[in-house]
Length: 230
Image (cartoon, rainbow, N blue to C red; front, side, top):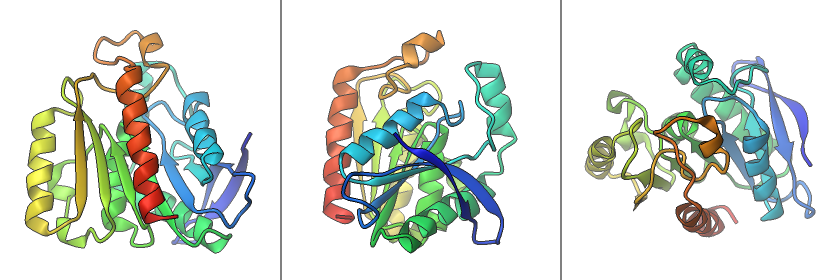
């Protein structure tokens, strides 16, 4: 089980986060896990704990400052009130810096849905990150300066995604190629949030848990991080 900790942002402010660590201790490589639009709920804490079991220090920054919801309208309200630039350049960057300052030689970022979009932004605004993974989420392309992406980027996308259309993935891929960014994208015959084992309980038709796609994406993610931050 993890614990709530507090870390410093680059601007000197404070941010709380959920930290799960492996038995190997604080010298293990780190991964910042970025929440979906629901907030830091038990499901995203479970992702951090699963990464800890795989040998990583996993830190989930609390982007909503303690607010969590199970209602889609409230989640949309919370997400719309989030300053994405601040979250990427301050909360997420501060989390990566914290992991490195407290023992991790290397650290990466992995985000889901809203967090996936932030993971792409982190590839641009968090130079300390050594590898980045986005799960079915991307920001508006005008905010993607591919030339600034130096760390490798892995992307998992759902071809039936109604929130982040696959056509947008194609456009992002073209922009990354033009900017010389190193990336690896995988497309899955699945709906949005296919890796969230609680997706079906949300009663939202665009969401669906897909165990086979989730397991394949997880294996690819572990292999990616093993290659770049171990």
